[in-house]
Image (cartoon, rainbow, N blue to C red; front, side, top):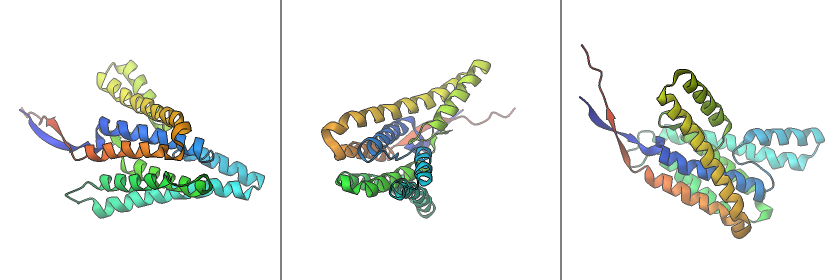
Length: 230
């Protein structure tokens, strides 16, 4: 015997797909159009930050330090929203995170080159909220705004499949590689559109996040099989 239950679409691969494409686009946007700063890959920002500190270049140090600090603040903001709205009925707390992220990125599209520091800080803040709020895809831990963890988990699962021939492990691996490909696709699209749309390219990210926001109103139906006791 089995019965049907419902789960939130926030962990569905379809939702993760739009989040990952958006994450790739955001990283390409800030690096290519906003002064070579990574919105998501804070490891790269720390490397560049350390280099400029060693060189005694204060202006460039601030260029990387402030977005890095706003990334940390974004994680804290997402966690506060989680704590305050975890029991909300009409809207999921992760949708509130997406709504704030969409508004921030939409505003970024209006900021000129001279405001790159503020723009990068806003994108880093929104990316951090996203990576903190969306941490699973079909129960597998993942990141929608960076690839290193997904690559490690994907290769680990693939190696485990070759050892065990367990198809579930192979499916897990494909989830990770799929997310990586979608992230790369988003980065490629962002780089391709920048010469045509300039700073407003980030608005495509808003549309992608809006799709994820709307998908989360759907309750995904799943089958649950209770244990059979002999």
